[in-house]
Length: 154
Image 1 (cartoon, rainbow, N blue to C red):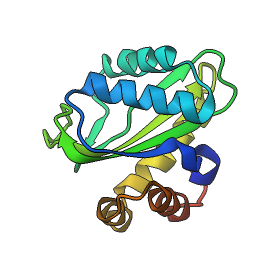
Image 2 (cartoon, helix red, strand yellow):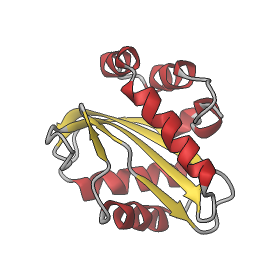
Image 3 (tube, one colour):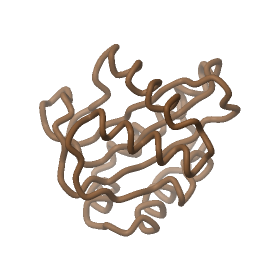
């Protein structure tokens, strides 16, 4: 599994400023809808439902919101770089500016976990993170993410 199979160029966006986590989830849902044809409301509800179990802000300005959805036949990703960091209730209480969202089929099981592990490892790579923060072109961000890791997920 590699990120180029999870994330298409149309699923990467740079956003200036969002006012809340709810607004961020709306943006992620709309991005998933336009890039993959997902139902935006279903995607947003899935993200909010998962977030109610515990925050997906993993620290160092990074969030990995994810959801399992009905009527989805493969795992897909969306990425947003925020120009102005957003308070996200992360584990380290730091605001978030890099958000990689994952949507997986309801019954994806271990494949969902493998995809999440791959994204997590990629987003823990300090070199990748610094390149993402240094660029505001969606095409370059996609290239950085998809070239970063092509290793097998755990």
